[in-house]
Picture 1: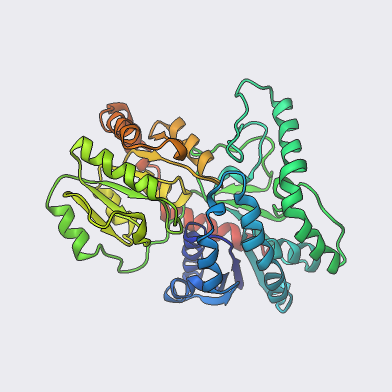
Picture 2: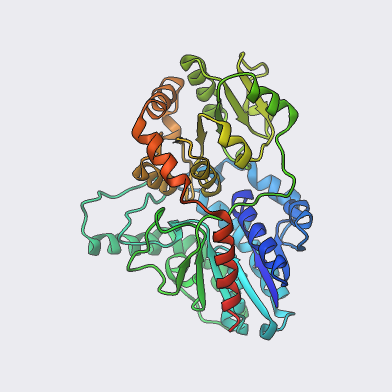
Length: 413
């Protein structure tokens, strides 16, 4: 069977799909990943076929746009720079394949795959890495930096979601979608994110039910596999990182995400907080201009490190709230201080706080004093340590990948 994995997004969106693709390849399937050419080496090193959706240069330019991390402007930026440009090439590639021996497992925002299912009859599994896109009246998710009072009844929350979709989401998302649908002879749609994007065949959630329990208004054909993590064969910590780890106490690890180019305030506050607490820190970012020219003693900068290896030796993690980063921290059993910017990050942060393993700070209010107080509270709380340890025992990346493969394989039946 030929499995095609179209994906739109940053490393946190792409790497779990690569891991699922690797597992499918090991089960004897032909696997093609459709993604920005920026990720070509990652895909090909995993032994998977690669079909580019946009250039590496376009991906880099998109990451430089500060609107990508703005609570209200992020959706328009993602639509213009990611969703819309990928729609036609995804559909046209799939149109050249035979639906009888092809299964498509596509990330939610890869609209071209949903169009190919609707227009050409491809079996499609919609893959959701996080619960945010299951817009639910039962969750009261933080949407665009706005959260309604929790005491509002379900009927009012449902009305609120319809208004948000009609007034703020559809005007951004549906114009390019419906324009292309018209070319394909398909009628226009509304509630594109809240309802249309989920495949009527299968929906796969790559997170566990204890992180986000299914709600009555979630897709009824949903299967939750659990967290999936990409772990490249032979991954090791760089000698500089390994040497730093063995020379002192477990450090606080800080990352604003692989694609964040505007995290100076977070890194500065984290450095001040670590100094105030007398703790060492490892600062992860590929963008060196986010850090001071000279770091204080007890601080180390690294462009990247495999979190699965690093966090098991860390005291805590300060991060942006990306679902992949959160999953790695949960697996390592370390407390998390989450500073969410946009997209799914605020909702992920809220769920981690409710699980008792994290604290949350508003990025506009991040200071060294606030980060220090939050970290001190997390690190000194025995209940947090207990919750972290308990949930770490429940994360099983391998089992989740197997379940994901089974769900994708069943779509061809």
